[in-house]
Length: 204
Image (cartoon, rainbow, N blue to C red; front, side):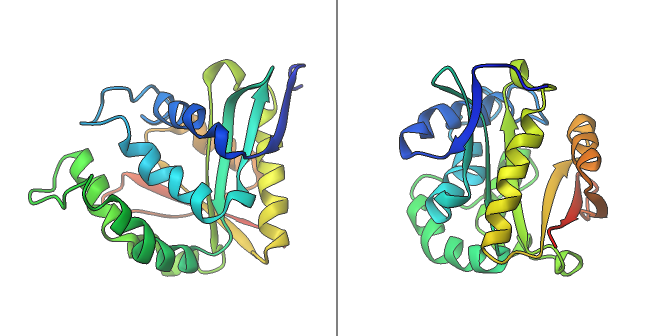
């Protein structure tokens, strides 16, 4: 059962510094990614901040005694998000992240993906147009809070017309895959290089 003194609430702009930290502390397939890349801004700049910029109403925070200890963010329509990302988010970060000339490292691949957001659009995920990202600090995992955050996110996505939602999970993150499967997600496909598995969940 969820521990006392924690609650799920809507995202607030003042949460962002704490959420950035959580994103990094859980960013290496669920482990601490601090120092893994040239800047610790990389993961939140790609997988957190654009979501709360584009759809803040689909962001929820796990608040423990006034401190964020987890969050979920999502978008109801990945295609519309990709259009916004290309028009708005890429120009905003263009001076911060140079286009990689020699892809091959994980950092270069992530930045290359940033400049090619259409990679998010996979035909086999058409029935699951929404997608989300969830991160919870280790001390608050396994207490039912992940399910509570996901329930809030599902409701928000349904209210905005999403018929299904998908997630992209590192194949190394077996624990996360198990979490999604327990919620009812089913495996849809893998990325071409086998590094990512895609799971989908029907919202209707």
